[in-house]
Image 1 (cartoon, rainbow, N blue to C red):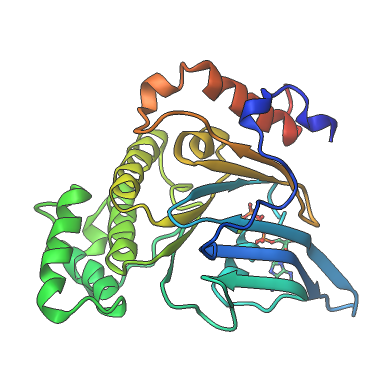
Image 2 (image 1 turned 90 degrees about the horizontal axis):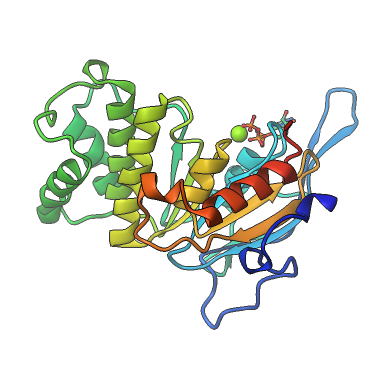
Length: 277
Ligand SMILES: Nc1ncnc2c1ncn2[C@@H]1O[C@H](COP(=O)(O)OP(=O)(O)OP(=O)(O)O)[C@@H](O)[C@H]1O
Ligand SMILES: [Mg+2]
């Protein structure tokens, strides 16, 4: 806990559970515990009692060491694995299978190679129940928003990595999820494309305000994008810090990096994670 030292108190949220808002949080973990059985009959404790909430429209980033259980948490939230203890709620309801309205995006895109750019985005609209007569309009507006104009009929193999991730993001948004789970979605991209994608995601999020849990290894990316940054410990994971990001919105990727509040927060997280000087 010495890790929490050099940060302005205004940036830090209390570590006790967030007070209950009148409306159910979009997502909630209550004393979540997850263990996996190992071949030698022992168990691997991955999550040891995590409690957190994500409010409607809130952008929460999660950082933590590799193997700390970040992806495991996302899998529990979308009903892909059952907790060993505690509870997982989405929209106030216990999760017992993929909950409606929850969409994902992973580091590696999972585009259908036999569908065009527009076709891949359209799948999201189909699955999300966008009525037939409104689908094309939704697809067209996302293509414009994500600057994919002119590539509507291109095949995934004809796109760069950044474009493929923009199509994945388009498909996720077309689904109109109320909770977006994003697991290092820009982790495989080069620096410039990653910054551009972050900007893209923020402009969409500022327009539509969907709740997001965004896992990343990039501290600056977490602070630049999120309302809150949760720092996980090494396995078994606990939340060692919960920072409120006080930077104003809309965020400007470049000028923000010179803001002392940005530097203070990234440095605090750096030391929480005990990264070398
Ligand atoms: N199905 C499983 N069976 C056994 N162990 C598992 C299983 N799934 C995950 N684990 C273990 O749980 C731990 C946490 O894995 P997880 O993928 O959640 O980490 P992570 O924080 O996402 O790491 P990274 O940052 O490298 O993606 C790891 O030690 C992993 O080996
Ligand atoms: Mg992971």
